Length: 156
Image 1 (cartoon, one colour):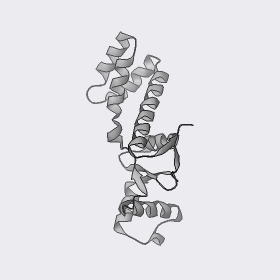
Image 2: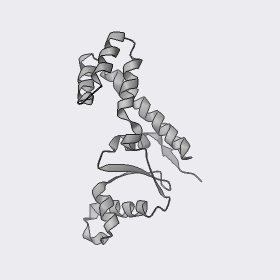
Image 3: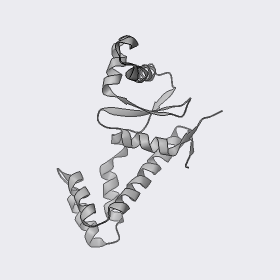
Image 4: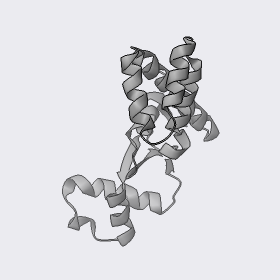
C-alpha cells in the first residue's frame, strides 16, 4: 500500500532548504527530512555513529541511507529548481495595478533584487498578496513533484 504524504509537509520541506541543506522524502513513512551539508559529509566519511551526539546520530544515519541510494529517500526539488526569481517575476506581471507592476518589475533586476522587492511589497501594502501568490507557487511545485514521482498526497 502506498503511503499518503501530507502536501503541507512537502511544502515545508521546500521552504526549509538552503544553500547548506536539502530536503528528502522517506517513501516508506511519508516523513520529510532536512539534511545539512555537515551531516552529509559525516555520512560520507563513515565515522562511527557513536562519535556524534545522540541528537545528531539519526540525521547521520538518514544521510547514510540517502547516500546508499536505496530508493527509500528521494530528494525534493532544490531551491534552484524552485527558482524564486521566476516566482517574483510572475507575481510582478500578475498585479492588476500597472504602475505597481512596472515598478516591482524594474526593482527585481540586478544585485539586491530580493531586498528591493521585499521592501516594495511592504511599501505598497501587497505583502499578503505576495505571500499568497508565493504559497500557491510552492503548492504547484509540490503537486507537480508528487505526480512526477507517483507520490500520493493529501491536501488537507
